[in-house]
Image 1 (cartoon, one colour):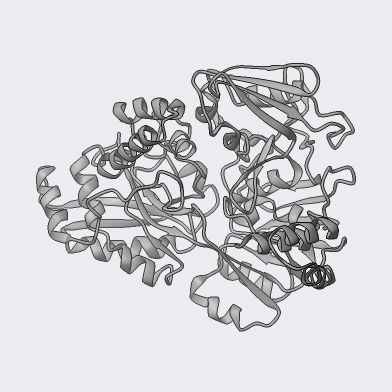
Image 2: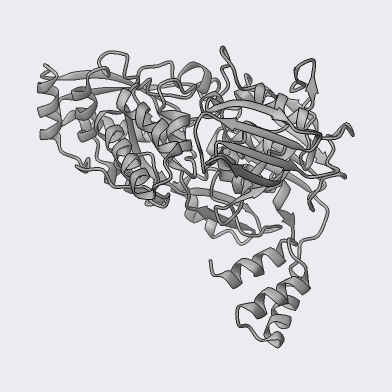
Length: 526
């Protein structure tokens, strides 16, 4: 997106005034007459308030809760993004911005960070948002015994304290230039302090929408927060769980809902011919994976893991299951668009002979393993498993595809069964991605992989200020994961969703699906 397009989109979204847009355009060399004409055209499509938004997502389970420490997927993430706000957020350009925080100032080699809060922000119950609430919200995830999904990324915090009503001071074990990115995580909404902890049960937050009703595994209803600190257009919003992609698609085409995620790629052409529907495809950091538990036989043998990596035809998977909507990956979870990304060698292309070689190195002539899959993991997960079974058979590997129920998949299968299908939305920095999923003590270490050298580098790279040294460390870590890790990365997938043409939006963020999981806050009815 060019700089001019960016400012056009900001004007369209109501984020800048007409005067500011003309000024910015003039600074880019656009004549005043042309800038004025552009502003007039854009103003004609300017967002307006009103409307009841209905979304259907392929996520959600009866075990979901309002505790952000337990948010497992897009349903709870989008719910949390609608009712809550974090200290920071990532914008459509992939840059970090203040959300509840107005400023973020590092000192002492980025080992101390001072976050100054917006003044006058209140929770849904009218209580002021203060530094004490921020401290309590972060401590909710920290400490021994915490099972929060973000415990590992917060472990470097050695102290957190309020400095007056509006300032929070974070002290880290070592410098971290990326720290403001971490505070944007969707598990970290600020909640009101209560009895030395936080009140997560009520769903009272400081976000754009006020929670009205939450029925886990079914739906959530919310209404616009009249006191929110940014402009919001939608009056009220309902998000439904519709795990079956055919039912989800029917809900959109019949007008029952206005937005669906995870479109059925096989029928995308039919949707594209519907004049009342628009397709939205966003490339980001997301990737589909098949994680193996490296502490469970036979996956505890690196040669078995390597044999399975060579026994998969990823090009075939991308072509037949994802119909080209993505990029083939090489068992490195760092998206090529992220700083410090490398292409590890060798590339795992389909090679049954190499798979047999590694089976033999593991002392095996053949192998039989279970692979658990459900479309709750990602649309097409079962198809991937069935196709993989055909590929692996030529290497003497018998994959028994276990079709699991969608409901409860994340609680009963993922990280419980030895080998399963899963997905990651990805993270915008190497440190964040590695700390969340591959650090030895990460709550979401879904391969149970513990590599001492990797963990040593993870800590060292976080505080390394020499760019070349940092790049070298992250390169070695990606190579270690590729060679020794328990993950098979099928591809970096595009987010493919569809919506009624009654809905409109500005630039769409790519850090998470559903416009950075902020769709209800950012979109409007045309």
